[in-house]
Length: 237
Image (cartoon, rainbow, N blue to C red):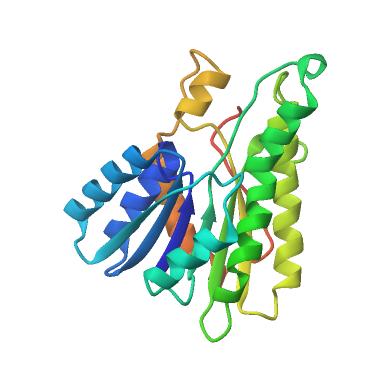
């Protein structure tokens, strides 16, 4: 099995890679992050879990990842087909709307929305066909229509709403290509990002617990869902 996970150096992404190493017998996992040292640590931890999984660290900023860089990695590690893509990388800027600049909005959307568009576009030739592919986009309850919203998160929440609708659109476009696309709108999880956004707040779930759910969904959810935005939350925020 071939898996690609963005935002793999911290929090949920870091735990996701380790959890896949426990759940699949053999395969390759490409991990993307701007932090090469953390990716090296992750690779070492995964080797202790399952020696039959090749964890391939790729130090790259998803907001500017190049087509040639991804394709050369796939070619180098003989990965002609992508079974699972998890777009997990995220950026949160907490500012009141009156203080937000266009640069702030662009930075958030570049990581949270445009990187999803960019990676799917790049990897589409390696998806679907004779073997199925499941794309799982990680959104937030902040971007889930009708959920509680919080001051200072207009850039973040609106970008996550955009990811959700993009997921619905991609599922429709790819429905005849053996590619399923779903979106998980996560509630609060105890991560560095949450701590910075809501100082002092204690989330009901750890990154490891949420990663366990996401990996299960990535492996099995495409049998039951396509084009769905699924809330995964015990509480709000």
